[in-house]
Image (tube, rainbow, N blue to C red; front, side):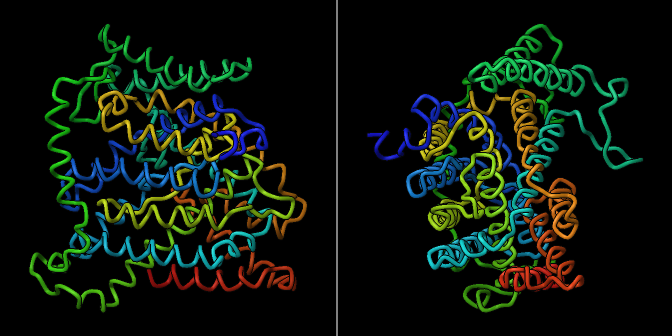
Length: 473
């Protein structure tokens, strides 16, 4: 049945490979289960409810992607956009979290409308091949950059903003040993990968995690929760009580966006607007379109980058069944808002599963089932430390760099915008910024050298829309 539904043989894969790819993808994404509640709780939402909403949004999104499009892309509430939700819309602009969820819900419906009418697919296909290749490279750099930060190798530095960890100045029982475990994991996983061991990344994750557990047992690593260094040994001692609280709090977040009386707007703590009047306000549309733009181009960028790595694009640079993949993403966003979480989007960590052979929707469905099971096994999944997943993500970033060979650097009118695209993804911490600024530079460079006829009309329209976006939002 699985063979027939997911067309495994046609895609050159088998059940074992797909399930392994789903497991790798899940393990590199599992951090969102801990991080998303931390960020969204700033808005006043109950942490337990956010945890359950995050699990359900990732489950529904990944399953929809696999079943509708038959692609190995996994979804979950996105980083960055969740910070915009809490810190900008709720804390900064003074709106309630229920109001912010409503904006996410409407954004998802708009996203779905454009997907069903193939507008988003046309946008996808209008992006030239050099920018698509640059997107894959940029995502690779972005993934590697995030990995090294999570592994405490790249740290903040007052003189140069970023720098490498200084082992003489950090606590060797927390940050220092964390960085050493990361470096050890990169070396171990790289060796396994070079030797061609099947499941090298999975063995690398578990091997590095085991080193961390041993380090904690022998006192080399000392957990200190106040600074973000938690135990890497699973703890079930308080789990049953925590789970019951989480489900009670989920009753608060689920469906809260439809509570009209909660759509308040405050200024310095005083309520200045409430109810349906807010939907008519300019702020609602500004907030909704901000969510929309980030969601749309984060998703497009991830689909482009991971599709290039997986060989899913046609010779013309088009993605078959793109509208189905985009529709799944849109449905997941609106469903996630109903559950009680910020925008659900396609994760760049999907590249981890694709890299080890995931080629069909069975990978995404496997990831979805693992997210669902995480409700029961949360202490295990939440104990997976970033130093264990960092090596896998770092090497996925390395493997995605291979797409750079598809960029002709001798043809500078294409190569310079590609360079802008790939460089700005890690530097601005945003896939969407890289794509948008790459498109703007591509259009204007071609216009100024008299080659505007080579630019798809949608690229020209998008360039001016993006300029307005940066000017007004």
